[in-house]
Length: 114
Length: 115
Image 1 (cartoon, one colour):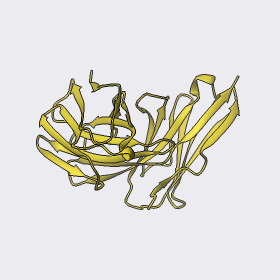
Image 2 (cartoon, helix red, strand yellow):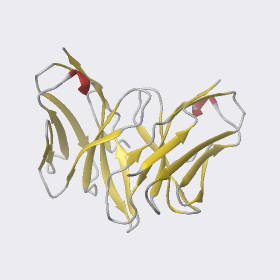
Image 3 (cartoon, helix red, strand yellow):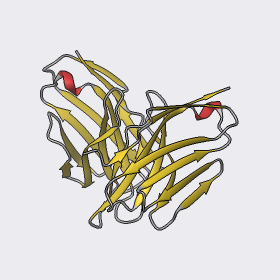
Image 4 (cartoon, chains in turn yellow, blue):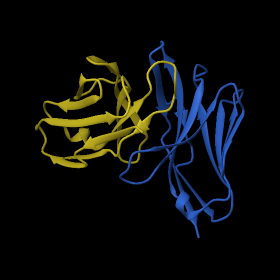
């Protein structure tokens, strides 16, 4: 069966510091991968998605970037965090192609920028 | 532009009664709709879905209804249980080419089921 891992679970970082969140998926090959953010009291906002190694699409202009160095690894980064980057970050995967619409989420990372 | 809207931020029902969560969308290109359930500090879990070619899909206590002409869908939970208390997100999907699909989420409805 497929599993998705995210770490760390929680993170407190000062303004201006760098960020690296990692997500890995097991049990499937060539998945589509996604990064979402949930701000306090808000819905899920799609930040990035990837259909393959090195292929990243950005949904909104922001202080963040994403990379996919390996088939089942997705990394969310920032060079300098802003207060507005605080939130709950979620990684998700789905089957590639037209096989499925469902996305499956990881446990999330709670980021607090102070 | 909020393409998927859940106008009720919260809903409270008694155990054993029916819970009805509503969702409206504006984009006629959406062709698949999903409901997710989320507990605090956890990732959302997929609950049930429906294709735009159907008007109803049922899975145990959960039924999703789709009214395409009204661009409206709803999730019915019957009977409601205290363990159903969570935030429920509606999501709508549109394909991007042949590589997959992207989901657009509503802002969620907090369901509280009282014993």
